Amino acid sequence: MLPVDIASLYTFNNIQHWGHKVFDDFTKDMLSNTRPFPCVLGVEGFRQGALRFAFIESTSSNESIHKLGTELKNYLQTARSLGKNTSFVSFFKPEALKTLEEYEAQFWDVLNALHHLDEKKWPNHIPTDPDHYLWEFSFWDEPMFVVCNTPAHEKRVSRKASTFMITFQPRWVFEGINGNTVVGKQLQKKVRERMEGYDSIAPHPALNWYGNEDTREWRQYFLMDDNNMDAKMCPFQAALDNTSSSKSYHIDHRFSDFRVEKGVGRALEEVVNELLPIKGTGYVEVQKDEPFKAHPSHTHPCNEILHILKGSISLEVNSALYVCNAGDRIFLPKEMVHGSLAGIDGCLYVIAVLTE
Image (cartoon, rainbow, N blue to C red; front, side, top):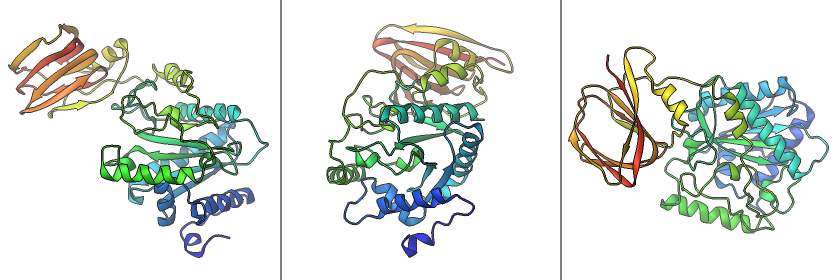
C-alpha cells in the first residue's frame, strides 16, 4: 500500500492491474528508509508530487508508441509548472524476462520511434551527432536526459525495476547544477555515497556531467551490469541520418540581437541549406583564417551568421570575449562593432549574409 501522503499526490484512473503493481514497486524503491535510492532529485520530486507517469502496453505496437509520444508531449508542455525536480516516468507492461542486450536494443528502438513521431524540428542548440559532448535526446523541442531501468539488472541495482522503465528528465532541471558548482559537488557526493550502499558494482565510468568535453550523454542512458567502455556507435545515429532531409529548415535572418549558439554541429551541406535565406536576396561563402589571423574591430552593413566548421575563433563584442569552436554558430546584427582572432589551428567557417 502507498503511504497516505504519497497516495494523495498520485491517483490513476483506467489503468490495468499491472500498472498499479509496478507503481507500488516503484514507490517502495523511491521511499525506502533502509536503502535510500541514489537519485536524490528523483526521490525529492516524487515526494513533492512533481513526477508524472505513463503506463504503456507495448514497446513495439504503433498505438502504444503513439500514446507514449502524446503523453510525453503533454508532459513537456506543462513540466515547468511542476518545479525543478520533475521527471516523466514511463512504465511498460511486464513481459518475459529478457537479457540486458535485448533490453538495450528495445530501449533505443523506443527512442528512435519517438524521434520519428516528433512533430518539431531538432533544437537549434543541440548537436545532431551523438558523439558530440553537447548532444542530448530531444523531443518536442526539449532536450532530455534519459535513463532506462530493467528487471535484468542485478549488480547495478540503481538501474533495476520490476518492469522495463524509461525516465525522461528535461535538461533545464539541471540548470545551475554541475561539477563546478557547490550544489553540484554536494549532489554528486550524496548520489555516489548512496550508490555505494545500493549497487554491488562501482559507478560506471561513463557517468559524468553534461557539458564536459569528454562526456557522451548517450552512454549514460543505458548502463550494463559491468563497467566496460566499448567503442560502439550510438544506436540513435541511424534515426537522425534517416530523417535529416525531412527535418531540414532555414534559419531566420531577421534577428536584432547578438548571440552564440553552442554545439549546433551539422555537416557542410546541412549548414548551407539552413543558412541560405528562404526569403530575400543573400549568399553563403566559406572563409578560412590562418592560425592567429586577426580581424580588427569593424562592422557590417547587413546581418551575418557565421558557422564554425573547423578550428576556433575568439570574438570580441561589447567588451566581452566569446570563444567559439567547431559546431558553434554566431549571429551578428548589422552595424555591431566586433573583432576576431583565429585560434591555434586557424578557423574554417561559413558566412551567410542577407543583403535585402
